[in-house]
Structures are given as C-alpha cells and as structure tokens.
Image 1 (cartoon, one colour):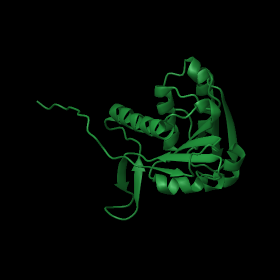
Image 2 (tube, rainbow, N blue to C red; image 1 turned 120 degrees about the vertical axis):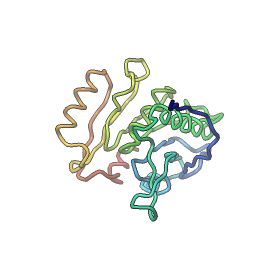
Image 3 (tube, helix red, strand yellow; image 1 turned 30 degrees about the horizontal axis):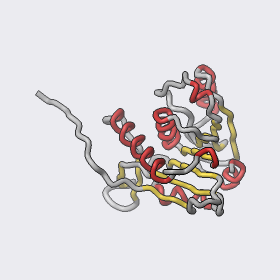
Length: 212
C-alpha cells in the first residue's frame, strides 16, 4: 500500500535587505518577488526608494530551479500545486520568522509598514497576512490580485488599504480578467483600488515613487 507522510525539518532560508533599520526609520517595506525570480535581483528594483528613513526586506521563495534546462540561470517559486497546503504553511512560517527577526522589539505604532507582492508574490503576501493579521498601512498587489482561497470576512481585511497595480500591456491581466477580479473583490467586501500604468508585467520606478 502506498502511503505518504510529512516530517518537519530545519532548513536554511534566504532573504535580502536594503538599507538599515535605525532610529530614523519611518517606513518598512516587505516585498515579495514573482515566479522564476530571486530576491537579490528583485530587491534592486526598489533602490529608488532607498534613503535613511526606509528599510526594505525581500524574502526569497524556498524552492529553486533552473529556468532553462539543467544549468544556467536560477529562479525560485513560492509553491506549485504539489503538496500545496504544506508549502503555504512552510513559506508563511518562514516569512513570519523574518518579520519577527527584523522588527523584534520595535514599536510598530511608530513606523509605517508597506507590503508589496509582485505576480506570484502577491498571493504569497496575502496568505501570510491572512494567517498572521499584522497591522500594515498599505498592501500593493502588482501584476496580480487577491488569491481566492482566503477568508476575507473578518475585521482584519476590512481595515486593509489595498491597491492592485498593473501595466496596460500586462500579459497576465487583461480587461476581462480585471473585470472578473473586481466582481470577486466586491463580493468579498475588500477595500481596494486599481492603478494602471504604461507598461508590461514589470516593476516601474515611476510608479514606485508614487507609492512611497
């Protein structure tokens, strides 16, 4: 008889930061890369926000793979359909560990916390927030929308200020998809806004500066 089982193991997981948290820090960003990206590359998009008042944290997905064939450039993915539920538990625990480590003994009422998820990273950060309910100031979902597997009927989600950002030429978000997502979000009573820009499935420095 075929049986499957699970065990919990220790794993070294990677994340990157930009800037330093000091007594001058006013804003902390937690940013989540998309499918096939690495955090060390993704965080470079946010260098335009770097100053002595801003601290940026970029977790990296736990699963790595070669993007083309069996060698060369490497990317990461937050999960696949295989063992999905456990993958979500693992990566939300990982993100929470980073949050506690970097903001340990910090008075969170004195800083602004922005969370941004790009593409696959959008669903990732929403699931993390849905599980741990951290008080944040802004949630930016870039090139993606809310996952449909969370329960949004809570006071926590009613208090979230969310914005969905997408390029007008984004190959993953066309007008028909946006229309369906808007209908879903309204049915879940999620507070959200849409912001689009001239561009593709990519991070825009010009838009980032407007968000800060």
